[in-house]
Image (cartoon, rainbow, N blue to C red; front, side, top):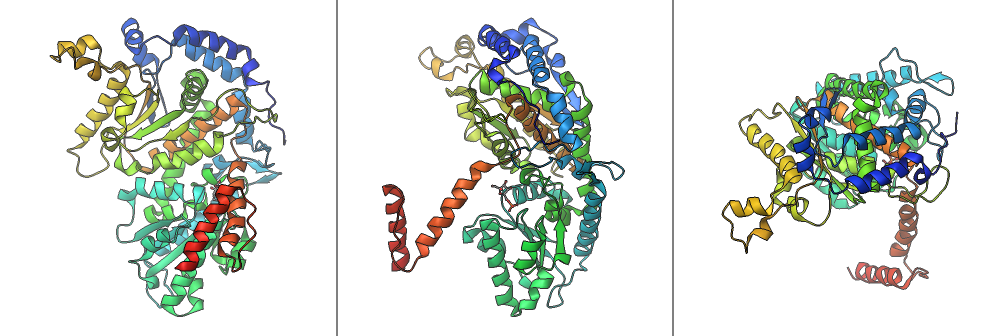
Length: 548
Ligand SMILES: O=P(O)(O)OC[C@H]1O[C@](O)(CO)[C@@H](O)[C@@H]1O
């Protein structure tokens, strides 16, 4: 099946109109009042699944809001769209592909077919190969060109071939081989490669070149730098065979680069780049945390897949979070959404989610090729707490923008230094409370602040947030958390009727950069045909380049 499920333009949907009317009626309701008039509000708006607890009671919603949003989900055939994805239908219609990241974490006895072929055995074959390779490396049994064991791993990739591996490695660092070093190179800026390798011994270093296409400019540039770095230092081209492995869908390009395809870990075109962490793209993560922990992470992904497939809409975490994102983007016109993990190890989680959310839902044409007349993805951003409290939270509390936030916390500390955990969690709960309920003028004055100073200290409150809690940041929980956000993206895409699995918007920049690169380096003055600004910038760079 290659067709997306056709749905009417979103803004003509009957429930959309009902939601517009409802928004007008509830937009000025305050969380103070909503909590005061409903003692059951917190349990009413708390759900659990796949080891995660979601308290969404501090949102600008009523029971009727949620009923309407669930009705909208029915009207947009969310369940049918979801089932089509899990079944392997070619729901990525703009690239004519199935969307089966869920197959990457399916149990070995599952049957998921693409074009009549069960892909699950292929998935498990690659996983098993990854595991035996990881065991070998971690045990010090992968020997480099000069006879020394490999102790450093450098992942070279960008976008989905970088953000997931780096984020997951940092998240699970306490589970990693502490006697090895793991580095991640993405930016085409040579500084990224230099900083990642300046203190590494090439004789002990393995490069994992991760690229779905094996054509991405940045990754190919960095892979060539790595090759040169290694050969210069070890003095022998043959060293490449022992110090490079590839992760890709493109065996031909891997071979052309000079990596033996016996040293390649495959994945498939039905895995989108930003959904590829649970595929072989996660090899560097597996090398760090070991096969058992990696499989535990996959089990967490699978837990959330099952929850998303089977929980009723009203109890379904990704559905609720996705619908709330739609509610804020389209009715409150919010432009940005924050993700604020109270866990230092999740420092790169917001960056990971940025690609997941914005490359997926940053679209303005629906699957019926209509320009949409409503807002799609908000800009997603964030930093770990408590760091962010001392930079941008000021704006969250008192700025003019409404920024719905996802708070993420863990009941148990990950660090052996458990003492500060109470303080960390106190800050987490305090921020959500402060944003929701603020401080009125009367309360400020009652605290002894003068009438002249009081207005500066008023917090309007009514700033919405979700609270996600889990027991502990372990591999399984991380998998569930990532899958939660993957499926939240899917829900938004289904409601908006857009295709969340392509990224054509990234292409123009690549094409233009290719043209400009040749103009920057041309030996004779090129005939610049850009706009006046771009021509002048190119000329300025050429002048500087030729002077140096
Ligand atoms: O894995 P590849 O093919 O090198 O692509 C890297 C990234 O580039 C993009 O295609 C566009 O930025 C992403 O979707 C992808 O994750």
